[in-house]
Image (cartoon, rainbow, N blue to C red):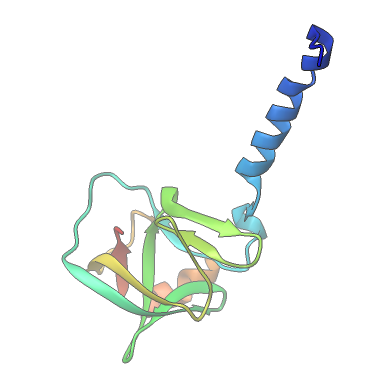
Length: 135
């Protein structure tokens, strides 16, 4: 088969389209997700002093973890949160859905002045334990 410069010119534009499509496929913007989360900007490696285990749920649209005896608000690193088109949330490289069981390493905190607290989460943050999730 004879190859010409003209016949190869379509490869680069097609490659760009394919790579862009694969990279953006499956995720949505924060404002398009039905799940709202409390986030923070990571400033260090974090720690694993405690373990939060429970079931992902929402209270007034805000993501929480339901333990056996408490509802805990996970504070998540902003750079580790992605939202999927099918209503899931990708945390630490794993895609979860409401009702899934999760385990996060991190630690409990009583302060929340360094976190981004969406309006939907203000009430639950004020009345529930807070857990800084590192991984």
